[in-house]
Every structure is written in structure tokens, then in C-alpha cells.
Image (tube, rainbow, N blue to C red; front, side, top):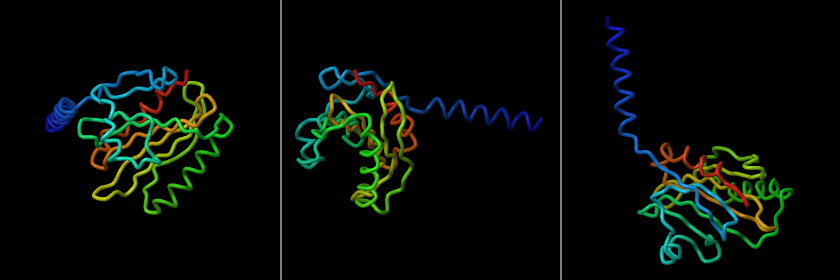
Length: 178
């Protein structure tokens, strides 16, 4: 009888916990002059130019940033001027891995690699980097678009990693180049 009570209590706890987990709804957006489709959280808005200037230096400012209300969780896209094609994606990925290892020797690496997403080779890096007052989870993914390198980045503070990591991966896996 005690075992049945224990199992019942465990089921009740799971149901109760699940009821309080905030669901994050994503919607597919057509971006960069309808050349890219990407799922973005519904409650994210395009970051203002003023906030972008504060958060990103002028030489590294993305083309487009979607952000939550506080600006602490972001999905950024940057269509660079760097020449790119499918054969160069592994080289670009390896260069970014080396760059991040040099910039952030204490970073906690979650992984990196190449995967096929909607028919395109996509390089990715997943790591936690130090920041001024916290640590930042980064999922960076890259591919080519019209002969140029497209960089996409999801980031959030360390306290949000557990909730947002699966969402970040869903966002990456939704990437579609038209």
C-alpha cells in the first residue's frame, strides 16, 4: 500500500510541476527579404536600434535581432559580406571554434559540428561564455545564403539555460533557406 501511495505522490508531483512550466510558443517568421525562415518565440520583438547599439559594438552588430522584453534572451541573424558556399561551412565552423577557444579559454563547451537542416549544411557551436556579471549560453549556427555567410545566434543568461536550451535547438533546426 505504501508503494502505491509513493507512486501516486510521484505522479501528482510530476503533473503539478508540469502545470507550472511556462510554455514557449514559437512562430515561423520569414526574414531577410523572405530569404530565410526561422522559428522565433512569439513574444519576442525586433530589438530597437538604440538597444542594439548598447549591446553590440558597431563592427559586430547583427543584421536583425529578436529579443524578449528585458533584452536578456536574443535570436540574432547576421548576413555578412564574407563569401560562403556549402563546401566552406566546415572551414568557417572550425575557424569560429578556434576563435571562441582563444577569446574564451574558460568557456564551457557543449558541442560543435555540422548537421544537415532542411537540405543545407549548417555548422554550429554551443558553449557557455563568461560575461561581466553572469555567464551566457550561446548556440551559434551558420550556413550560406546567396554566396554570403549567414550567422545566427541564440543567447541567454546561465540561469535560463535549462528552460531555453531545447528551444534554442528547435530554433536552429527550423532554419530554412529559400
